[in-house]
Structure formats: structure tokens, C-alpha cells
Length: 196
Image (tube, rainbow, N blue to C red; front, side, top):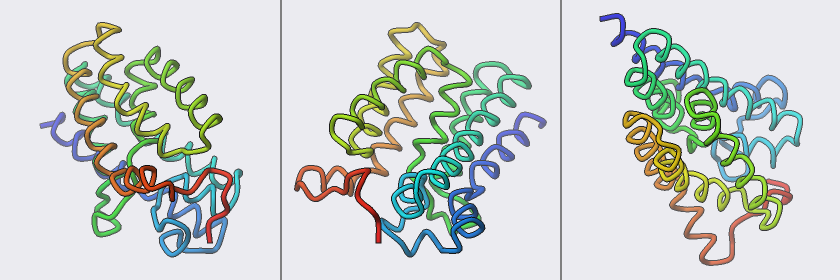
């Protein structure tokens, strides 16, 4: 019973729309009406600048980290994986915003940091390099998402983490389907382009 309650709590935690709330409180705008319309940290960054964008990023990352920590503390690797996945699902499909949320990257990064820190470090380097070279956050996000389950296998992580990583990777790639289309068309916005 306790484990089920924790999983539900982690979904609710993931549903907390920090990027939306931070944009309201610090920027005075509804982030859903600006830029890409997404409530993720990238849109906040491009709309309101680096300081508010980074605040949104860390808030979303913290959701995943806390969820994974709670699961690991209470139930071990399997519950940790389920709690981490629940938080990412909450971020992507938040109960507080009619299930219209972000793309799960920052929250997944928090889960990754808590449960697979070496995978996180490698992924962070890859993400930084791709973003720096291409200026496309979406390209970096999709690449790192695909690498997530691959790296968990290479690093011999528990099977629960491998399955979790595969599901999260599929979800993140799916949530980026419009970005992938724009990348192929050459119309995707770059990180340094100001949102309007």
C-alpha cells in the first residue's frame, strides 16, 4: 500500500508545472502563449532568458531526483524505477494542466542523476556538445534520450533501470515528434533564437 501511494505521489510531484509557475511568478506571462507553447525549460529560456530558464530547468530536474530518491529509499530499484517513470509521466501529462505538459527531458535527467549517475555524466557531456555545435536543444534531447537505455545496458545497470530508460526514451522521442519534423525540414528554432 505504501509503495502504491508513493508512486501516485511521484506522479503528482511530476505534474507540478514549475516552468509554468516560475514563468507566471518571475516573468508575469503564461508560457503556454509564448514561443513553442511548451511548458518546458527550453521555451522558458528562449522566452524569458537564461536566469528564469535555468530556474525552471532545475525545478523540473528536482522533481525527477526526488521521485527516484523516494522510490529507492522505500522500495529499492524496482520501485525507484517506477517512481522515476511516474514523475516523468506526470511532467509530460500533468493532472494540473489538463494533461498537457512538457517533454520530460529535465525531469528524466533528475531520475538519471539519482539512479544512474555515470550515465547522467556521459549524457550531460553528449548533450552539451551537441547543443554547442548544432544549437538545437531538441536534437541534443532526442540523442541523449536514445542513448539512455543503451548506456544503462553498457553500464550493467539493474534490469528495472534498463526497462525504465527504454520507456522514458520512447516517451521523450514521441514528445519531440514535431521537433524532429522541423529538424528534417530545417525550420527548427535554435537555442539562441528569441521566442516571441
